[in-house]
Image 1 (cartoon, rainbow, N blue to C red):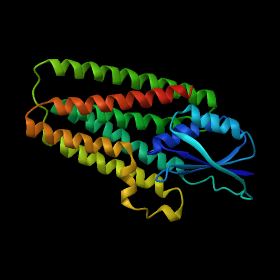
Image 2 (tube, rainbow, N blue to C red; image 1 turned 180 degrees about the vertical axis):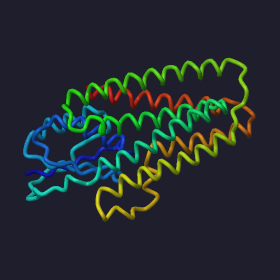
Image 3 (cartoon, rainbow, N blue to C red; image 1 turned 90 degrees about the vertical axis):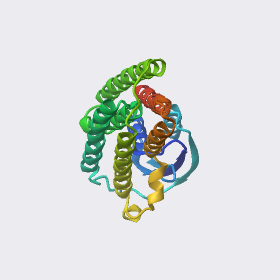
Length: 263
């Protein structure tokens, strides 16, 4: 058995972890994957095929590079970590906030909240792929991933179109209070999700520092919407909201492309 450590510079939330798991499932020689999201490290326990493993990680374009490979005597891995139950919890939180942010975004006319809701939906897709395809074939998982990817791209394109329409049209100002309050709640929800997923890795990580939560792109997006809401109120302009909306739609589209590459 060999133990190979990879640095994944763009693995900053559980969504990337699930994408990597799906990508590497086709490699039969892998016995176990150990993710360290806060430190952006992935340890692969395998028998051979290191070239295939490394190439699969590079294909995801998440900034992966091999750090070290060494023999190991470890052969006993705890594969029953209640991950399915935990994924259901995280999926539920993300999907609930998709509806919350989408509804409040449309009511308050905030493209930032609408875009952030799609980011939540994108995470839900990734968790859903892992859940609904449990026990299924790799082909089935890739088909589900492909459908999710195309759906995300469609929503992102529609979002871009709406941003352009509002940018050149005379639209009412978004309700900045709704933007700030809902984004703070989403920020808390993302923090809880990341904490729960990190806590599941091992007992040692159960009390990880809260600052590690802020390595998540989702948290950065939430903060961006909060700032945009404040700027909307300060400058009495909808441009900050449209700008953050554009950025998030771009990130959602980028995530969709990564999912499509799994197929």
